[in-house]
Image (cartoon, rainbow, N blue to C red; front, side, top):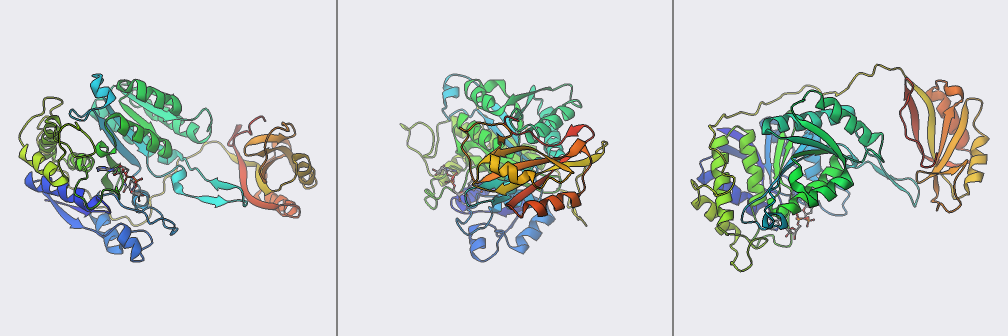
Length: 484
Ligand code: NAD
């Protein structure tokens, strides 16, 4: 028996988790459960990360968490326990599979267009760092982290998974035409990893074009890997293609701990009514069984689920409105009654079990992910973000007083658009400028030089934020302003 941690969650969480565990129990799945305390009521008890220390300890010692959806209390300044769990335990790859389910009518199923798309979403970085500040009363800033080792982890996982799945194509969705440094890095890593998988057709599509293509020709796609926020949005779009959030399972895969959950939330509008659709959580649980090598149980349960859907049995959120819906309990009982039956479409082969006991890792220190840079790094300037409601020319004149012999003022931009030395009077301004100082003749600067400039500028402006301008060899490690 393999032990896993289970958190039932909030809202419809306990109802759908009980439904799934009753299917597992009827199928004699060889799992034992340690129920852990996570979710809204744990926040309410004063645990600011939404889980008790005992829950954290149990999950870290078992390596697998199967969880229901959890609510984040609004307006209390606390972070989502769902995101905290994924980030704390470095579950870097969020795998979401979307398949045509017969019995779940969609535009595509009616048109006979089959869908089988796996989205792999980076799960730790991007704007989900939640590092946000108000720089002035009017200006909010969010930091978006895309890292080389973080991208490497998720992209390697995506390629490896695509290879095992026998995928024909793996696509990177991105916006590197605009975010040249951040999405550019993700895309660069994608093609670096692609070299090790010549058998897979690897290509990339800009994310807006990807959305258009997914809704017009979804059968063209197989595995798609994206950064965190874009992946979140695109995966909900894919959920829509196969019938909605009630059918979208999700696995958060890490090297040490993995979390299995549905994509949907706590559905407070239907909680406690025993009418929720447990399919997404059941599909997530089936994915977890395969992850644990319990192939036969996974296939038997999935075939029974597919057979049930094909037979037209449905909860209230989908299916033929002319056929009365069943409640969560009845839906679950129907699946159990269909054990051993094979669906007409996509029956899953009953592969032999290859049980995998999750390795329990006892880490003594936090893993440091670092790649080695061969080029020499130097500081060649600084971006000073300053608060001012004055016109660009006046801001420039004040800056120019402080450049010393070391710096030249290269550009001033407002919301990323250059407004000095050239610009347009039609550009609307907000009360925050970015003033870019570069070293004269690209000399290497020290942090003390930057501090001196900071000190001098602060006589005229409130400096809201600074960012060093680095160069590696001849390569500038920063973007240009629009219009520069
Ligand atoms: P939601 O997914 O809970 O609900 C959106 C709509 O879909 C609602 O009308 C709901 O009734 C319906 N729905 C969702 N799951 C269903 C199911 N299994 N069966 C039938 N209908 C279903 O999204 P929301 O209302 O934006 O969020 C509610 C709460 O859930 C929030 O507190 C949010 O933070 C949380 N949330 C948690 C997770 C998670 O735990 N991973 C994910 C998303 C949202």
